[in-house]
Every structure is written in C-alpha cells, then in structure tokens.
Image (cartoon, rainbow, N blue to C red; front, side, top):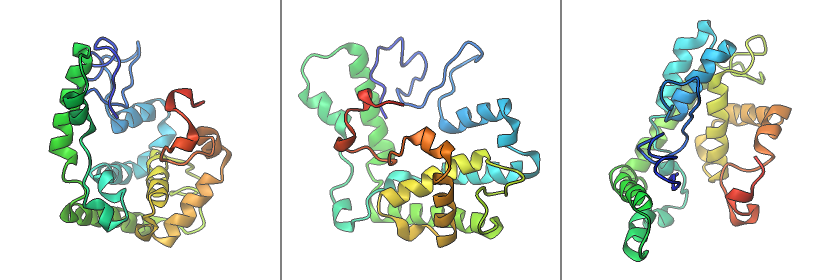
Length: 221
C-alpha cells in the first residue's frame, strides 16, 4: 500500500511511504511494520505471547513474514505471465503536474516495486514462496491439536500467531490457492472465522477488495 497523504503526515512517520504505520504519544518513534506493531501489542497484552510458546511463535511469525505473499496471489499460471504492473511508474509517466511530496512517494514506490515486486510472479519466485508457506504450515500442523479453536488450545486462548495465521490462510483461500492449505489448518481457520471476534473485526468482508465493496474511503471499519 502506498501512503499518498502529505509529507508531514506520511514520510515523517514512515519514510517508506507505506502502511501499516502506528504512531502515538506513548511511542518514541513510529512503528512501521505489522510485526513491530504486533509485538508492541504483546507488551500491553502479554497473553498474546505466552512465555511457554514465545520462541515458537516468534520463529513462525518470522518465517511467515519472509514469504512474498504476492507470489501466491495469482493461481492462474497464464495470468502470471503478465507480471505485476508498476502502477507508480505508470503514474509518473502519464500524470501531469503533481505535488512534490506525492511525486516523491511515487518515485519511491516505483523503485520499491522494481526491487521487490517486479519478479514476484516469475516461476522460480512462486515455487520459492510455495515452499516457504508449506514449510510453515507443516510445522504448525505438527504441533496443533486437531479440533481446537486456537493453536495452543483453549487454556492458552488466542495468541498473536493465531492473529497472523488465520488471515494468511484466508487470503490464500480468497486467492484460489486452497491447494496450499492443509485440511487440518483450513478447518482450524474456519472455526476462528466463525467466532464473534472475527466477524466484528472483518464485518464479514474477504481479505481482498473488489469493486462490489465500494470505495475503500467509504468503508465502515
């Protein structure tokens, strides 16, 4: 995602011009990644990162966030041949006079795309991402007790790993990559999605936006 607000509201908080970014009076500096924000939440809600499972949770979260999710987002092999369009670069070449802060954001995003996303749908990158996600799923399946709502059981309750794993599984299913999700974890994610907490957080929406949902700015969060 590209932040296109003014420089004072964007680059002063996150010089990568991206979200998520968390700011606040209690923070010495902005938190500029979902993992950093998650661990900040764990400091305030320690039950999300129980000590007896902390090492395991941190390792698996690190592996999950090392996966290039874009490589798993296009199931149609033919469609992958078109690659990932560099929209920021296209805007720079076609848009007329634009504010300098917005131009800087587009330039950064265009370079970021070239470095990290341009090759995401190439065959070797797709295979790499598939192998990484399958490895994580295999490790989690080996320790998960089938039938439990949460990864570490009802006695432990939801952890920060649950909070990252269920959206990942759901995104893969929304993208048509159910083939990557073991049945035991698909059933687990389904149980979590049936909870009131999930419905309240997502309003029943999928993980991917489409035009039928209306403009993002008009969505009730």
